Amino acid sequence: MTRREVREVAFMLLFQLEFRQDVSIDDTLLQYYTMDADSSDDEEEIPEVKLSQKDREYIDAVIKGVGEKKSELDSVITEYAKGWSLERIIKVDLSVLRYCIYEMKYMADRTPLAVSINEAVEISKKYGTEKSKSFVNGVLSSFYKALTGEK
Image (tube, rainbow, N blue to C red; front, side, top):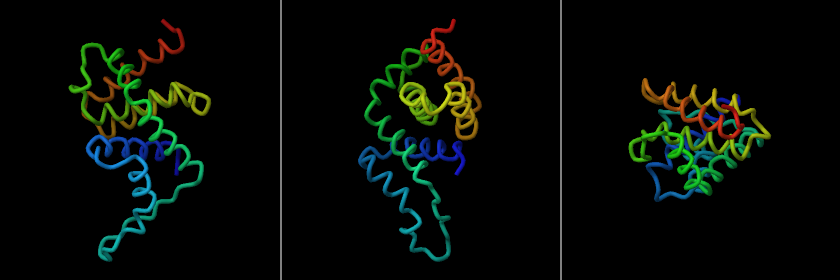
């Protein structure tokens, strides 16, 4: 898988967890990694999930990291999403922001910050509303400036 596809998987799993708070992060990951084995419907084939060890490590790190740092990430989002409460932010945008801020803050050694932002904006364009791209870009750009000391 490409890095963008792997990021999309991480985003989708975080998005799913927004609605499935009764399911643990570990169970969600296990379900995703084994979903092709769970298919018993012969009429509809689910494509096999082909993930390298590196892909799994990235997904695990992001999903578990966001889970552990969720309140910290939400504080960052609240600070940089001026005038927006978490409850007003659509779940797609919230999931994208959480994974990207986590990646920027805790995984910057693996991915340049500008690449993280660009990938998050692309995912928000694909899955969000017309306004998601601008909103996500604005929040992440403000966070980027604070993180790097840019003005």
